[in-house]
Amino acid sequence: MPSLVAGGLRDDSVLRLEARHLDEMAAHCLTCYPEEGCGLLVGDPTTGTVTEVHPTENVAHSGQVYSVDPKAYLRVDRAAEDAGRAIIGVFHSHTHTDPWPSPTDVEEAMGPLKDPTWHYVLVSLRHELPSTRSYRIQDGNISEEPVVVLGQ
Amino acid sequence: MSVEVRIPTVLRSASAGQAVVSVDGSTIGEVLGMLQDAYPGVRGQLLTDEGRLHRFVNVYVNDDDVRYLDKLDTKVNDGDVVSILPAVAGG
Image 1: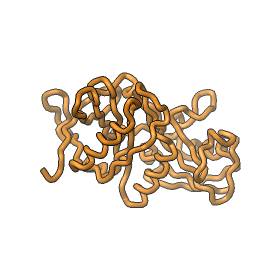
Image 2: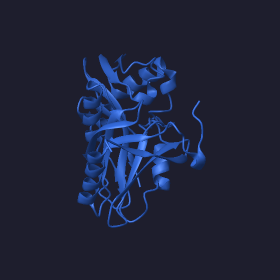
Image 3: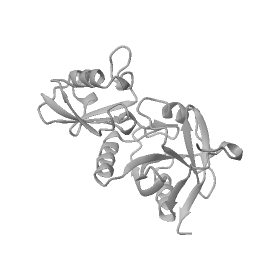
Image 4: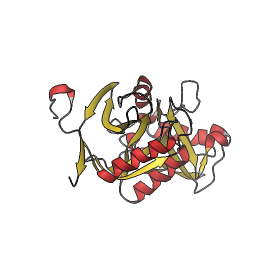
């Protein structure tokens, strides 16, 4: 059984990625500004390791909400399955607020077909340097998880 | 008509772990209905109580979103691949 540590973090919950993945997410979100940027994370769901970042169109074209292009989801999902990987989460930007899931983010994470093991990565553009955090959203509860940058 | 249905990860516990299942039906509505009958755990995940496609769910026939075809009345042919995917959005 996973144990709980201070702050409500599950000690087995972690997002692992490379520095270039952080750069790819931040660059895409800056390109999309003033709209929210979004994209999908492909990798190994058992270890929470990202192997690919796939920026996608925000078909909502809004600075307040995002909606991943469904056609891009289909394409990324097929390619990931063929490669023996999976979509393990989603990233999106908050253009003027902190990197913390919004009530809309939590509501959407509770919908049908939503995988409770997904990693929800937030990129805040509130300050000059983008700030990136990762969360699990399970049963309506938000818990932040550590982001481990591999190779550092 | 027999089509292949790609099952999303979260429903695979309901489909005995299978990522792809074969389902009979001549429309998307029939295919989803058969799927629910074969795998009761799927019920409530795809259609609303009124029998419409849930707004959090996207269904594709091959490369086409059924919302832009005839929705649940979209015809399927032998060998078509139906993909059921979560709609991913937030604020």
